[in-house]
Length: 250
Image 1 (cartoon, rainbow, N blue to C red):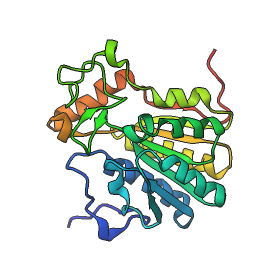
Image 2: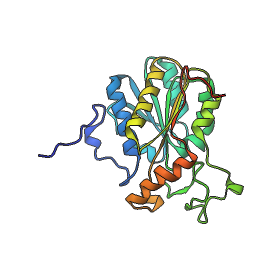
Image 3: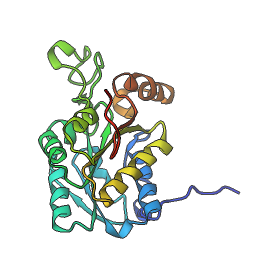
């Protein structure tokens, strides 16, 4: 007798299976987030904001209040919702373009203002929905549709270290971490801590999730996991970067 996997209570059953490409990591990130919401029992308080790009396919993922925004504007929209009703638990969900390119000014200024929201950014090193162009997170030497010979760091610079930059400008009380779809238990733990940090009113919370895109990477299953577990982690270190009460390294 086969047993169906447990579906988080906050998922919308009628929107499953999801609309992401086979092998995409978005579904895994959203599963971890959904389980964190369930475990905290906050479904009725959550407002979920989805950015344009692959992340917009999450618009009907959860059975909670959801809003779609213009590209890169998820952070300020969710900030406005939180300021209007501080009792809500507000989540801004985006990709590397929505957070580190067109939406970078909003993300980093919200962090600097210590807005009491959670921003979740899915990093798959390229722009997935529009065909796999180079993104701020594209690795040195990585080939994409707009870097066919590999990312040239002399011309394009190094990949954006988003959580490290956010941690550097946030005030005490912020929570910043980087997880990966290769370790869902750890990723869920980071997301849960980030939500608890918001609920405690401490400050800005930010979680980056290293994710997969075999469609645009043109990789099979083995190569996909090798890339996310070995290549991406050379530049994007997984772990908690800043937490309330955490002492700064000397």
